[in-house]
Image 1 (cartoon, one colour):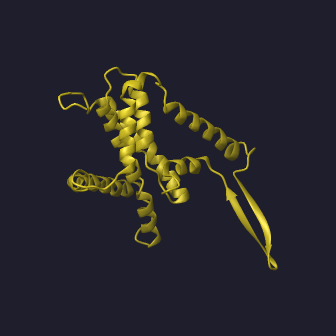
Image 2 (tube, one colour):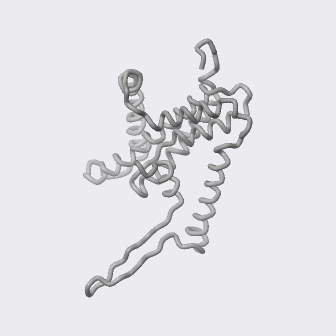
Image 3 (tube, rainbow, N blue to C red):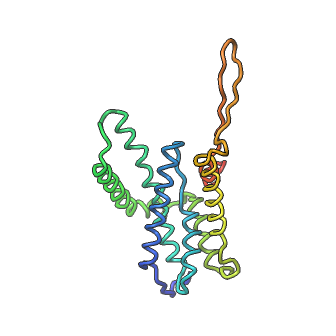
Length: 217
């Protein structure tokens, strides 16, 4: 962007959209993390969703989209609480699961994370040669979405996300709801005088998380 441009960045619609995406991706991360022990980053899908929704407004710009995806990228960090609270219960430091106590601990952790991120940003991002592949990928997506080709494919990205969500919902309904499809398969075989099983499960949530995380990770 040219420095002389003055575009709105901190807008009400952007803050509301970023907050909604953060809640949705945090809930998804918490569910997936408690189920399989890993979380995924939400910066790239949030950037795609933000561009698709804000394109409905004529005065939307790349700075506003960047602000939304930055908000939503905090979902992966906020969901890390799933590794801390169960640990407190396992070591016996907590004897119960109090909602308000958990809320206050999570809020304090989030505020401390923001406060520490502000001074560390210059050292780890501005004055550093560390590569940030995911941040670079999100930046490229935002640049492509705000470029000359933005009108040629208005539903680009959002169509795939909605289609994947619909297919995943149908598969989950057939496996967990109607029980017409099996969610796992097991192979039994003899080992000496006994028998053992090799179970194989299938989950569309894990397929999506694996696609976002990638094989190299």
